[in-house]
Length: 155
Image 1 (cartoon, rainbow, N blue to C red):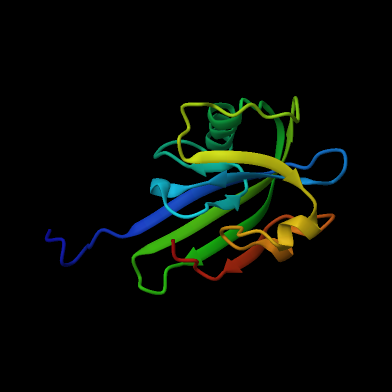
Image 2: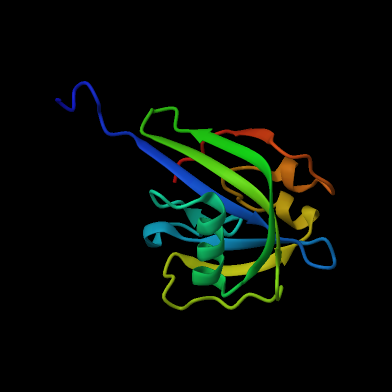
C-alpha cells in the first residue's frame, strides 16, 4: 500500500532507569545530540529494539552506556511526550532500578553522552531534564503504573 495511507511516524519507545544512591540522589546522564547546544539531562536508558523486552533493553542500555549491572527493576511509570507538529512521539517506560555498583563508568564509544552524575532534587529543578519529569523525580516513594504527561521540548 502507498505511504499516503500509512505514513511513517516517529514513534520511539524508550526505557529509563530511576537509580538513586544512598543519599537519595538521582542518577542522570547528559546528552548532546548532533553536537548542538549545551546538552540536556535525562534518566539513563535507551531505545527498545523490535522483539526485545523492556527489561532486557534496560539491562542492555545500562551496561552499554554506563557499565552498570541491574540487579532489580520495578516498573513505576509511563511517560509520554508528543511533538505538537506531529512528527515525533516518545513513550518512556520508567523502572525503579537497583544496580550492583552505583558508580557508573562512561563508555567512550557513546558519543551522545557527555556526562553523568547523581543530583538532589534542588539541583534537578535548575536543570534541563527531558522529557520534563521533575515533579515525578522529587518523589520519595512510587506507586506502580503512574502516568506522566510531559510537554514536548524542541531540540
